[in-house]
Image 1: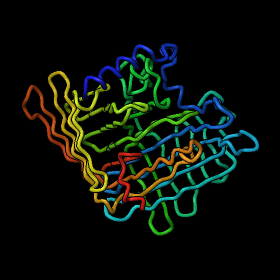
Image 2 (image 1 turned 90 degrees about the horizontal axis):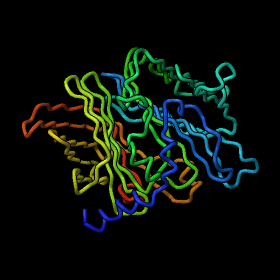
Image 3 (image 1 turned 45 degrees about the horizontal axis):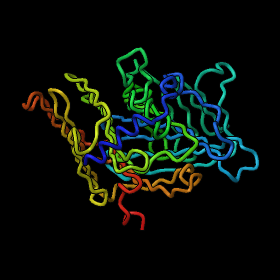
Image 4 (image 1 turned 45 degrees about the vertical axis):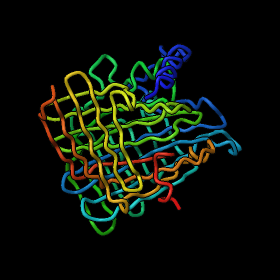
Length: 351
């Protein structure tokens, strides 16, 4: 990172919106929010669900308002995907005009319902779609992102609250045991697994491109993501690593300083090295380019940015953890998520 970029960081700190210091996210922000714009709005809930020896499920829920709505009332977008450990990913994108966001029994709690299709609340999800019947219920204690009085704070921490860049976003759980069932008309599955849930909402353009990888297993829960800060060339990274022996939070760090990132979305890989006091973590994520699929969020149409997303749930991810220069742990996750967006994605993938 150049001195000019370092200076930009300090400028962002000095002239950022300090009023946001009082608006840190909390676990209560899982509930739906009142839109802050009647022209452009998006709110998203992302469930990533891992079932050992079976595969990954993805359930993304969204509400959105677009400038051409006659009545500025949120509509629903739902993304469903299943990527078996051996086999091709199937996905469905569903749009619906009606969405209910208030639980008649618990109006202050999270609730998302599209009548006849899905009901989701703080305890469960029930989906009844043509070829995607799915249920999930929490089956143990949540593993929140932060060890603090506010476990629902953004992974960006104080930096997000001072600079106030990007969307409002937090990780509700890094990995919680779940019970699930699934049927697609040909196969019926049920059993135990793990789930990660994160949440974001915004009324303006929120990102200029990111790299994202996460995974859940009996050995390891992890999530790492990085991208550009606003319209600058500054690239920031964060992440969390939870194994049987280590529980590490990687605070916001900048590419070229305590983070080194090398990636090529066209070849389907991202290698990132994180450095903090006493520890170095090397993350190597690789997926077959043919395993990626594209996704078009309504919010990207709303804000007119044409942001592109390519996602794989078939990434092989290897972690090498060093403590005081010595390798202390090496773990390979055979199936995880790897995603690229915006200028960090592969242009040829979408041609």
